Length: 107
Image (cartoon, rainbow, N blue to C red; front, top):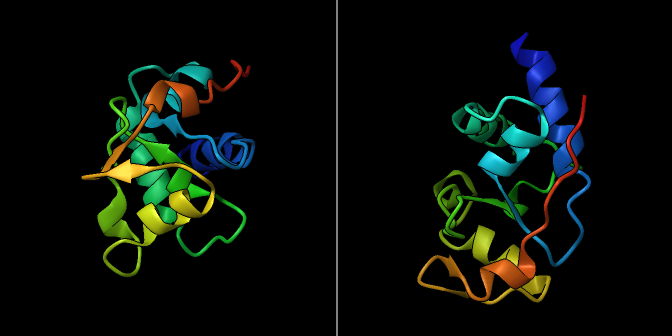
């Protein structure tokens, strides 16, 4: 089940447009498993060797870069977001609501 869940998480993460972010909880809710935000985080952590999964675009519900310590280098997650035009101050996305992308509910 876990591998299947992770693949479903990655399918949604691949849809996040450049310059947008979403949250672990929004992905979990879209999958119909609203209480599994932490498992979405585990999936994102496991995806760092997968170049086609933009894990840097998944943040916590407040717009904090809570997964940044899983990226190589001290500020790689922030640099990747800033390269897409998203401003980050003190590990917090500026204008989080403006950059937030809501995934569609999947079945």
